[in-house]
Image (cartoon, rainbow, N blue to C red; front, side, top):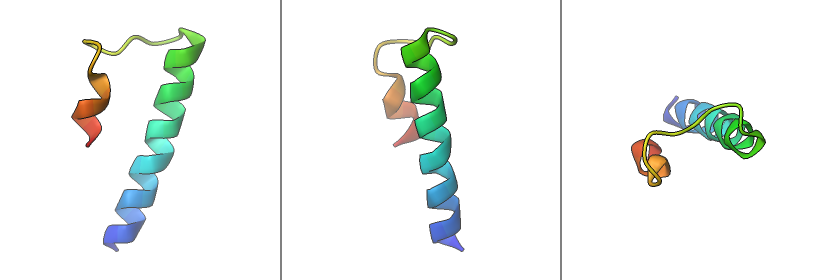
Length: 37
């Protein structure tokens, strides 16, 4: 079940990064990715 959580987190990251690239949302700080590691 851990793998399910990891795959969901990866999907969320992909969506978040796409929204950031599109400029729809802004991450707090330039190192926002560190929050998800």
